[in-house]
Length: 223
Figure 1 (cartoon, rainbow, N blue to C red):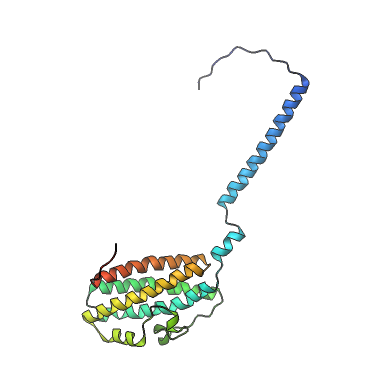
Figure 2 (spheres, rainbow, N blue to C red):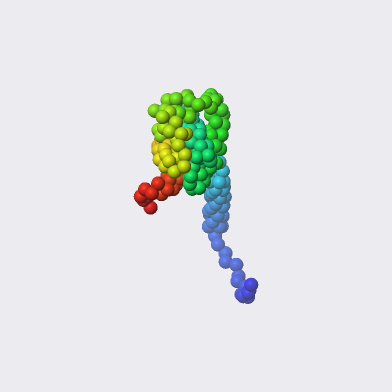
């Protein structure tokens, strides 16, 4: 750093009253600066701290819509798993088999997550039954869009080869579309942020799978 030498200056005398007034103003400025710094620090700290209670409740608290979504999505996912479990012995297309494996890998853990939430909320979780797969267990099938009927499930279980591939893809598209409807509903009505995050993941994942299934069926797909 370069230092410039200057010739010394003689002190300038000021009236005592003016000096006292200047000192008072300086002290006041220091006080205001200190308060402002303290206030800014508190604001910055709050900006990086956890949200207030008022902000937490709508993000973390659950409501009836979240409970209904979890209770209905569990049997809905279980039926998708049952459909997918048929693929190894019946599918002719490796693409269909790969898709079925991906569905199992995604929806199995989601069932576990939904079950853990319900238990944490003190809500009874129904055990898996054959009726659940067909939409006639804890909730009637009409309450869960996209669920296969007994007849549709029986048909899927009875065919193989290309007939299975076609039936599987068509029925799974309908099943996925039902899940999308349920996910969008909880996004609109729910209050539990982790549930909302899962709903968004379901929407993103299953929309992509619907596109793949339509392509495998040779249907036009919008890009």
